[in-house]
Amino acid sequence: MPIVLREPFEDLTFMTPLSEGRAQRLIRFAAGDLDGTMLDLGCGWAEQLLRVLETAPHARGIGVDSDKASIRQGTLLAQQRNLTDRVTLLLGDAKMAAPEHADAVICIGASQIWGPPVEANQPLDYSSALSAIRGKVSRHARVLYGEGIWSRPPTPEAVAPLRGRVDELVTLAELIELAVEHGFMPAAVHEATIDEWDEFESGYSACYATWLAEHGPDHVDAAEVRERAARQRASYFGGYRGIMGMAYLGLIAV
Image (cartoon, rainbow, N blue to C red; front, side, top):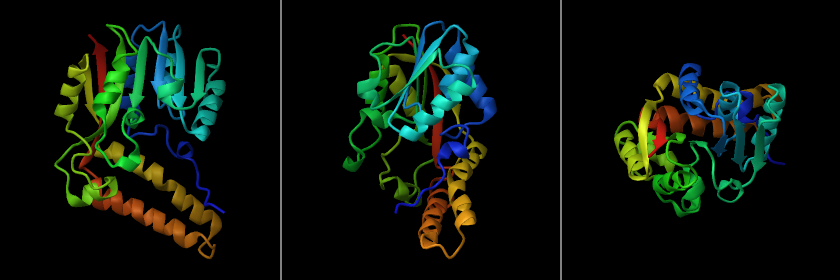
């Protein structure tokens, strides 16, 4: 039987390296004076989308994600926050399931939706993502776009767990210019700190410790779980920590 680990939302608030303080600033930007529809592409469990709706009481939200457990958790959170009448969470491929137009967009860590298959081992296709997002919004619309970048020149250890490509990501400066080329102007630029990354990686990996504590060292799958945990530690602490970053761009369509 497959090993069943805790879902990320059981140990994380956001499926991205993001502190509460930065989240509040980004949500305020995205919400603005919105009274239309906010579309969250690759919404996960829709934490950012739900917070926008709490900040913009006249807005509605649509979130799309391909992960069933995340959509189920997002639906539960919407119920707990009395937002079910203003939000729709869709299970499916955002290229197919998302509406053609929205008044504002969130897309964080989901550019791969519009790029080549992971199996193709190609660089992250920021351009296709930015082009698709721009096609969904009108001039003046606000877009919250978050994606991985190189904070420092990549080392062999950093790229090893990331398909081994030094061109997998771009720098923050390059990402900003890509956004401009695709019809946006940056109104707010953020980059996750090491503390935000450490908190995210700790929460993402907590499932291994929880599983081992619950099942004990003699369980038939214990060695495999320990190996998975070791690979994750090596990838982050011995690899991309401080080298792979996360950019958050508050963009306005022009």
